[in-house]
Image 1 (cartoon, helix red, strand yellow):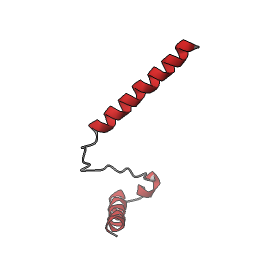
Image 2 (spheres, one colour):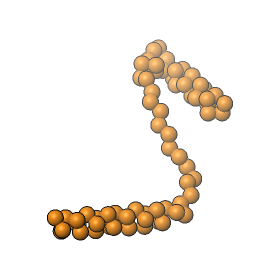
Image 3 (cartoon, rainbow, N blue to C red):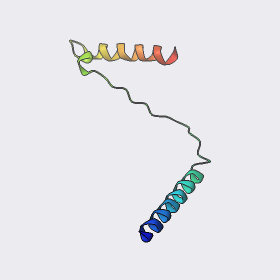
Image 4 (cartoon, helix red, strand yellow):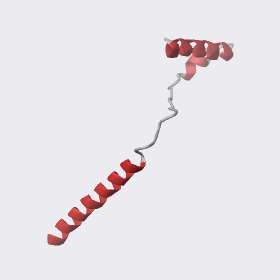
Length: 67
């Protein structure tokens, strides 16, 4: 029981140290870009001319982003 208690205390100390040093390492990080993912429905791009569907999609997306 005593060894388990010491092990738990040491584990908490080590994890705290790791989290603290990680936060210090990222403290000066400046985010310059972001990545976004969109889920597309493939059936929306079926039809006689898929290029038109893609162009329509981009036009609508542009309106949403700029809006």
